[in-house]
Length: 184
Image 1 (cartoon, helix red, strand yellow):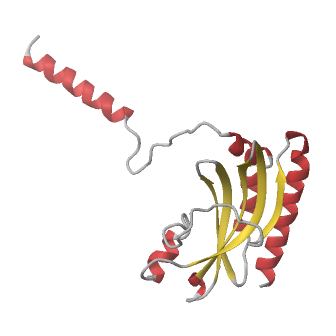
Image 2 (cartoon, one colour; image 1 turned 90 degrees about the vertical axis):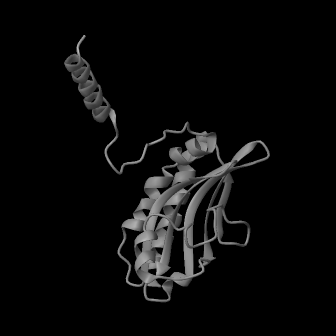
Image 3 (cartoon, helix red, strand yellow; image 1 turned 120 degrees about the vertical axis):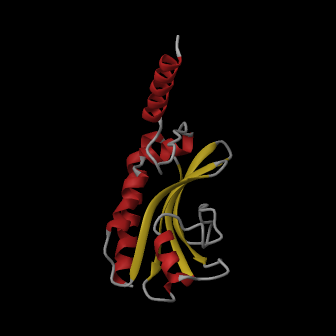
């Protein structure tokens, strides 16, 4: 085999590697196995239910999401909203549904929390772009479920046989949130 054939093989190898690469700038999509709590959220249609809020046009609020979050023993789907205007960033409102363990059962929690701005500086231009995809950059919050007295509207043990009731409760609460965002 001469140098010309070596170069041709090398060229073909380079072309093959280029074809196998992911597109420039795209992230590897890691498909994680669903946990039992993520399955529960999926079964009650949590993501699509909360997407209803972020598609709305509100006179005084900007709403983003939904985003799926997960912790070591919980999963959740949240949307986040803040008031329009220069000082609206100071408090973020998280609306969401979470599935988490209590003893040996999965609980569903639906509620809202108010989270104060925690970044050291505020730059309106950068904030406006970054907040659309991730609230955790500016707010010191992991996205956990609200506790009793913290805006918790619904908490119930998840049961596959009662998933339609859970789904209906979520739907009603999301409609209530939509009315609150529209009238506030």
